[in-house]
Length: 126
Image (cartoon, rainbow, N blue to C red; front, side, top):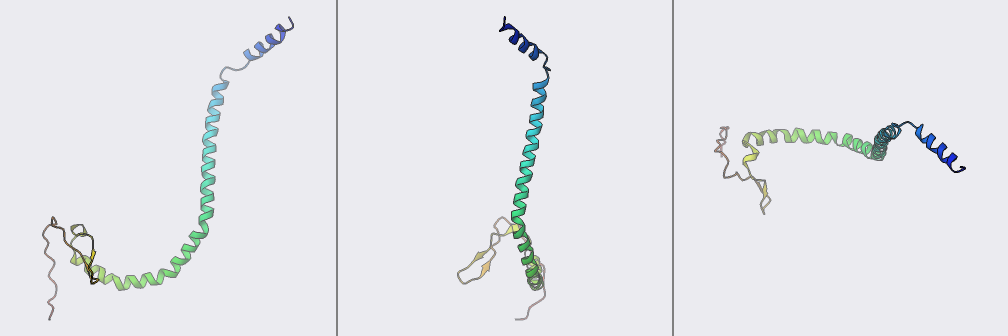
């Protein structure tokens, strides 16, 4: 009889527990899992940004130092690039540039490229 009373009390206490509790716990732990994953990802990205910050600041300083040189390059190379673009119809019609043994760089036109007539320029006295 002494064994029956504790086991009956235990069975009664189990019957009083709500039935939906395990499902609710599963949903909560799943949501907690996603929020923990999000928090972990956020912490990883924050750490990466903190590590990269000095390099980014250094790069910004380097860019400021090189800005005048890039402007000068654009002023000098701009007209030459415009002339090159006027001379070449489409770069997809050419093979990659080749460097010859004497240092010259040539662009060979592809055999399947459409026929192209360059625009007439000024006459050159030789």
